[in-house]
Image (cartoon, rainbow, N blue to C red):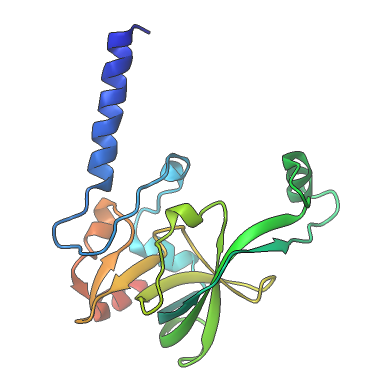
Length: 195
């Protein structure tokens, strides 16, 4: 490939990425980039993520904790065990996780109690593509129960989060044609879509 052709390809990619990551004018919250590895796993709609989630709730971030290394017990001979060994990490069954403590203010779906406190675990593999959660953030969390860690994980690194402003306006942390339709709607409207 000639230098000119390579320059055109690189420039085209830069334009596409700038369009993907440009923040809509009505969204005061950060919009997350869609990492290349997740382009194929992009959810088609809010309904799609709601359908795969077993627990959806409105919550307030109480504490963002330091990362911890967590051992995972794989079934002997499983694909996970084989991959783990090939990675050659310090501990064949270790992964780094980022726990976040969240207070539940409203239950949308699932077996969880309003007023309870839960831990959402974020993986080292996806934390760079998840919202930068801060204490006091109020959000809708679209999750699945993780019994191994006794907590919850988002169904998608960034499509599983919706910011809530002080006036109950919702802003998705994920950009796509379908998700942009939820930007600027009221919380009650999003809840109807998630049920």
